[in-house]
Image (tube, rainbow, N blue to C red):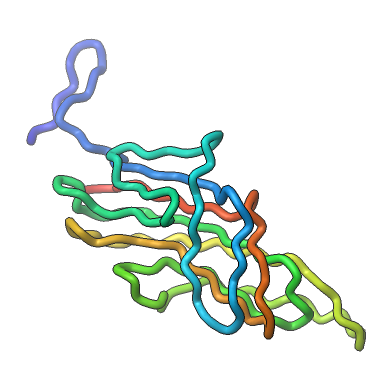
Length: 165
């Protein structure tokens, strides 16, 4: 479809940056130890965007619908509370349920103390991904602690938008 701009600046025929989605977690989520876990509950009513109706906020999944295939910019931030010193957390984007191969990793600081020091760690991830109709993306987090840890809901979000067809 050709793109046109009329005399008053209105653009027609373009699908720039649509569909788009954004959500912040509603509730803290318990993340088991030593495994990637899908993040869910992004249905915050205050800050939520769903153009194109392909964003399932409860499941934390964006699925490409008919006419929405293309190259997307996908962004996410995950935050865990209660990590002890020198523990790892990772945040990655899963395509079609696969374990993320590209992820951001954060390691809590060592404070030169023999006592446990609990930290809150966050990690951002940005990825450019080509998605076909039926493909889906989800945000995943890895907890390197030996016990389950909670996300910090107000600092855990997932978003994306189409860059081109």
